[in-house]
Image: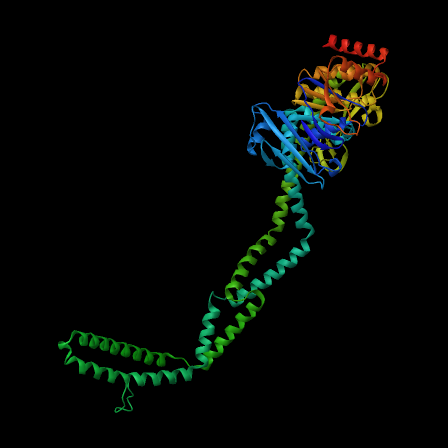
Length: 572
């Protein structure tokens, strides 16, 4: 990793080797910034306070080796990232204003993607994670993770049934609690549908009636105008001497017919006049028919207006026109069908709810049995690890219990509370020595014991659900003496299966590391490129002496440091 302008670190490069790397240094030298940097690369929360005072932004860049074909590689390639000879280039920038950007394999990506990859690449543990292990939900998750498919399969089925039960229950409650409102809605819809059915409107009827009312209201004027127009076109029988358009056009055609043979142009005009005569006779005939058919009956006009009034009463309530009224009726009939089917629906939902509760109870029982079996194995494995961590008489166990609840599901003849993860409350218990009753680790473990339980749990996980890298940030706090040596030894064994990075203040732990990095400040209080260096030979002895006695040149401390290194090499 390259770290720039992050906390006390000005510009430094941290090279993490395979195996076990220990990061040491004086308190406040910036060791935790190494952990913070890795956390940022893995999608951790950005904070403007991390940016070095006076800098525009903090930048962390890293090169992470990823196993070919791993889920992390697949997810990265889906995001458009490019691998560089089996490694991913990752960078994270945090501005002084708190804005954050992430890049993966040369592509800008959401920070959340880095967090997704982290689950498959690195397990980070610090003192805050120890506190997280005290939560019952985290303890249940740890057990489920250890159990693997034995729990994951029934838990997946349980989660689906639980989700469906929640949906069915919510719908059932909505129907029953709103019964009065739904009944009122049904009455209103029923009234409206009956009112529309009584009128029996037809689509487009309102337009047709409006046109008919307009025609009937002006029948006399229309008839008079049609008669005058007919007389002008076809003549008036009562005035045989009168001149009409038809007679004039016929005369014009006769005058041209005598000479049309002498000029084709005139012949064409004659034909057109003939067409006009035909058209005049057609129009005159239609005008005569129109006048004969025109109904000037005032009773019909009254009937039309009455019908229009009935339609208007509907359009005032249910739509702008008859088409919208009919559409409202169609929608309302469908909705009324839903409301009137509530009783039947309530019966269906109640039956489905009861069936789901029964199914949920059976799945919860299967889940509990799988957890109980995995809990015994998990506890035995952690207990065995604790024996290797200077806690030979400690015993770890799981208390898997359920809470009675009359509104719960039936499991093994008991009605118990249930939730999205089952019916079990899982609690990790610790008996630190013979004769001590098992107590919750939140109450029965000291800080040092909790650190060792945490490490034991992670070592057990490494054998069942391994990740390539483990990062421990002072999980050895509160530990000393022989226990510290055993922690160092156990971390070295874990490093044979994965990369292990430990930020520590204990020389007994650092002595077991394959590589030791020293973080130290310059005189101005910053960490520069030269401030993170690999310790070898005499330099490593000097740092272990400082960690042992606070004195780099103490002969006694040097001898002890050399003894620690020799013991660690012999153990390897």
